[in-house]
Image (cartoon, rainbow, N blue to C red; front, side):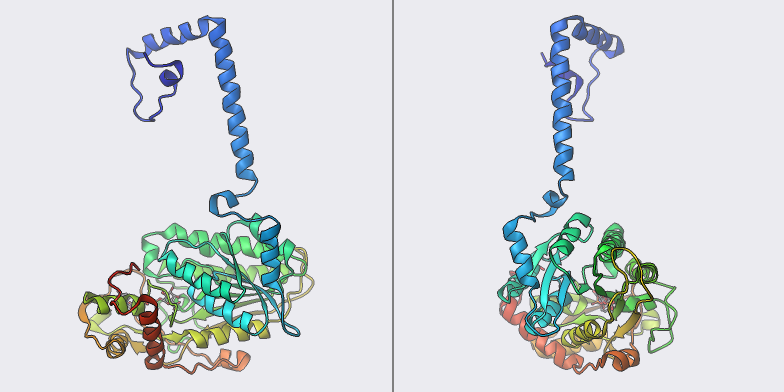
Length: 433
Ligand SMILES: O=C(O)[C@H]1O[C@H](OP(=O)(O)OP(=O)(O)OC[C@H]2O[C@@H](n3ccc(=O)[nH]c3=O)[C@H](O)[C@@H]2O)[C@H](O)[C@@H](O)[C@H]1O
């Protein structure tokens, strides 16, 4: 005989069985409430249910941190403060979001090494191997950079960080990256690149003093633009992927915060950044793994079998561009949510200015790896890819002194050296990427 609770609240939703139909149910209900003792038991049950609901709510309200990671407390605050400590004259205190990511980890290290205070921030999601992110974190930790584990959508956590540290700058690199993955998981792009960006900007706008913000846009905003090389003043209203659309939205959103609240904002359009500690989802990285494992790699080709090309940009060059953007950023003009005057708003291409075709990139990898690739050419699927990218960097050169110095041949050599050192010489066979 099932208990009363089991009768009315079957433990497996969807498997509720109507034994005997509506009339027999009515009879059971009548029997249940007929005795006072049963009613008393019912009242107790409902009170317990309400109490547990309320305590669950307060558990949720006391911080979404419980669903992501633990933060807060004396020790945690001490780590944040110590990481933010500045060790050079006129140095910065920088909040780097996406610090366990590819560009984020490199930028954090560069800033820390020159004496700036750096507090990292990352949600360590599993878009690609979180072990690689943990390894980058370990590297940063060994240089006294503390990474706060959290999501940029966690307004309470970000507000707390601004309470503890007077950040002079925010380097916002946390994002859902990848052009083609946007078709698989569109909402992750909206969550990170739009909602997360707004949450962060809200915190920056409310801060007193407001930090200057440098953030990662993308070469993909040029979309279907055919004028080459791509200049910052070119059309960017025809994105080819949702990823591009969210980055373009980011440019519009940051402009609004600059206009209304006086936040100093610099957006950087990165062009296919590659190098040691890179992203396993990117072609040069996954091709390396495939080639070493003797697996066929898929090379996309454009219309009329034209090779696709990218303005591959080496990480160290991009880091210099990021640091120069921080160095030349003017102060935000607002405070505590109020604008006090017009503030700086800039957008720069950070590319290499010399596009290389994808088959040529594969050829370079083959030479460095000393292994022939098994190539599988397929027509570019309609997945948001663009046929080529090519940056005009004269603006960045003029304003930031940006001058990339690493060609693809040299940069991939450094990448392969790192790859083999990191994953070992077992051709990556036991490595999950
Ligand atoms: O500049 C950016 O803003 C973006 O750069 C990067 O995007 P992409 O330039 O598309 O790099 P990546 O995926 O390495 O594909 C490179 C080439 O290989 C081709 N490609 C790719 C995969 C494959 O299996 N075969 C292939 O031919 C592919 O068709 C393409 O021609 C970042 O990932 C993105 O997050 C963003 O930062």
